[in-house]
Image: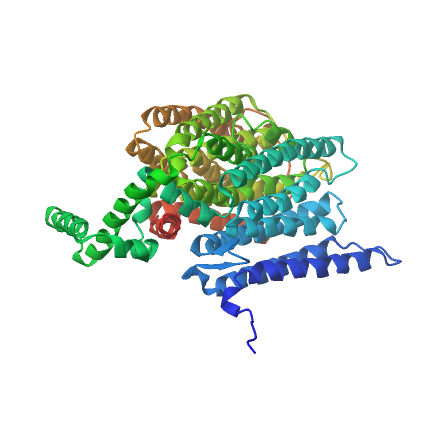
Length: 569
C-alpha cells in the first residue's frame, strides 16, 4: 500500500499560511476582549500583535530557501521564486514600518476598533498571495482580498462624511475594475481553455513562433522538444542545421562552444514549428487581444494610472491619513509584479501589439499627474497626483520590453516606496499643538515656516522631496535618469522626450513645498509637538539611505538584476 504525503519542500506558502491562521486567532482575541464588561482601549494591544505577526511572517520568508529555487504549489497556481519571495519581504518590511508609523496617529484619532489593524494584515495577506500568483483566478482572489480591506479602511471613520464618501467611491470604481478583470479572464479561458500563466506561455510559444525568439534564453531547449519529433528528423535536415551552428560559432567569437547543443535544439525546434505551424493557422487572436487589454486596464485602475485615476485624489483626501499611507505605498509593487507576469510571462508574444497602448497610458499619466498637481493646494491631493506621475515613469520603463527596463521598474518602485515611507512618516507624525485630534496637515500652508520652528525635520523633509522630484544628489535622480536612457535605447524617443520635459515642469510643485518651508514671508507658522525618538531615527536612516544609494547604487542594481533574470528566464 502506497501512502501519498505532501513533501515539506512542495509547500511554498508557509508565510501566507501562518499569517492567515494568526489572523483567525487575532479575530477571536479582539472579539472576546470587546464583549467583556469593561471595554478597554484595545487598539494598542492589537497593533502590537499585528506587528509581531508580520515580523514572524517576514522571518519565515527570510528563512525560506525558495530564493534559490522555483517551487510551485496547489496545482501550479502558486509560484514561489526569487521574485515573489523578495517582493514579499520588501512588502512585509514596508508594512511593519507603516504599522509603526500609523499606530500613534490612530490613537490620536480615537479609533478604538480592533478591526482596523486586522484590515491592514488582511490587505498584506492579499499582497503576499498576489506576488506568488501563477494563475489569473488566484491573482483575482488576491486582488479582491486586499481591495475589500482597502474599501473598509477608506470608510472606517463612520462619523466623517469625507471618509464615507471616499469609501463609497473607492468601492464602486474598484468593483467596476474587478468586473473588467473577470470579463477578460472569462474570454481568455474561452479562447485557450486555461488560465495558468505558464500554460499560456507554452501555448503561445508554439502558436506564435515569430514572436518567441526571446523565450530561448534559458538554455533548456532540449526539454521543450518532443522526442518523437527528434526521431523523425532526417539526416539531411540535421546536417544542414548543424552546419549553421558551426557557422554561428565561427562568426561570433564570444559564442560558447558548450552551448552548441542548445543552439542545435533551437534550430531544430524552429524547423519543427515551421513544419507544424499550419496546424494553428486558424487560431484567431483578435478577441484574445481585447481580453488581455481588459486585464491590463483593470490593473491600471488599481494603480491609479491616467485616465483611470479619478478615484485616487478623493480617496486619498477623504480617508484617514494612516489609511492613505497604505493606499499610496503598499499596492504598487504587487500589482506591477502581476502586470509583468501577465505581459511578460503569459502573453509575451502580444507585447508588440500592446506596446503603443502602454506607452500612451504612461505618457498620459506623467502628463496629468504633473500638470494637474500644479493646481493642488491640499497636501494629500498633491501626493495623489505625484503618485500618478511616478507610476507613469515606472510604466514607461515597463513598456520597453527589455531586460534593463524590467530591472529599472523594480529599482523605481523600491525607491518610490522607501521615499514615500519617509515622507508620509513625517506627515503622519507632525501633530499640531492645538486641534491635534481633528483632521490636520491637509493644506500645504501647514508647513509654512517649518524651517524656523524645526530645522532638522525641515531638512530631512527637503531631502526626501528632492529624491521624489528627481533632483541630484539623490537616488531618485539616478533612477529617473536611467528610465529616460532605457526608453531612448528602446527607440521610444517621443515618450522619453515628453517625460523629460514634464519631469522638469513637475519639479515646480515639489520646490513650492521647499519655498513654503524656508522662504515664505510670514510672521507666524504652525506649532508642532516634538517628534518621537524612534521616528527621528527612522527619518535619519531614510536620509542616509537615499544619499548612500546615489553614491553606490550597486546594491540596488544587484538585487533588481536577479529580478529581471528570473522573469525573463
